[in-house]
Length: 489
Image: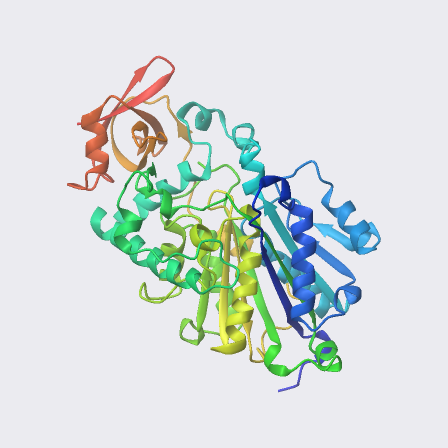
């Protein structure tokens, strides 16, 4: 087999992370300052002098300080032409993985000899100043989603959780036990993770049991199961060619090669899903990434399975045949590692690089974004991957589209008794149920959305007490004013 040209083999030479915990809010760094600090940390990790060599800076968009023109300010601070700063169009959980793939492609194409990926959020400071967390959530939602209160990610992902649990044949207790185990292991990883925000180990019971400090958010999720966006964090990754790294005299055991990646997506509208179990985009991205690197699940030593909400790593680990007893993170996930909006996977890349430098040979990174919409996976390895030749076309969308089933139309205009497709219950900050939302399948295959009134204790108990599995059971949909109301039979 021919040896690949070392000048076209992309490797990671430096990683850096910053956690900003000032004694007072006035001393906190903003997102731009965190990015610059993370870049400096990555340069130090690579031995110094690499920032000056970077011809391209790839930026994960930030939300916490939207008034800052990050590309322009980065260009000024780093003494670069603005054309060298390339910010992704949208902030999404898969963005850092895509930018890493783009960096590998740029190295493989000979466009640049070194580049950086960087992102940061000062969301903790922004939230304390009263800024909204996701200011555009309502604007981007469809009229039906707004009417039935499905605006934020925490209100959508439980629809996957409850449908997937039923598909797997798990009881509510079994599904929650799996979450408790996965999240407890993640907290254990975060306890020893250099870049993690919360370093406090939690037991499975502490994670799944609702308490005053662990209030229910959206059934069946509690606060400790969902992303913690109240963080000030930044991370950066430096990428160059194997030839350039060797010429600089970097030790081989510090270099981590970038393998091939694959990406596939669902429809932008959160309710436009063929099913609420495992999205086809996720399946294809994971399967294609393994195939394009000539790997099987058994070849993977470490994984980072994006985990804003439990349903995502649950689905992904089954596709990878990854046991629940093995940690599904190297950083600590978005509860414990920290949830800096779209930049979590930059931290995960940094953690994976550090892990591979001391243990194992190959790591698998899975980034997920939007409302379980975007999926991009990539492999990192200490070993040469013969099939990972760059530049590569990572777009696997056509494969996902060809395999995906039809997407049913969404409506609230159909009354009657229909089987439940999936559901959730939304809670207020005191832990009391505000309302439920149930999706049913109508007589012609349409997806029927309806609300469960907060005063309907019988129907809420039917959905949440675990005595029976609601998915597949019949419920009644009736019109009341401008809403469809669901109730248990």
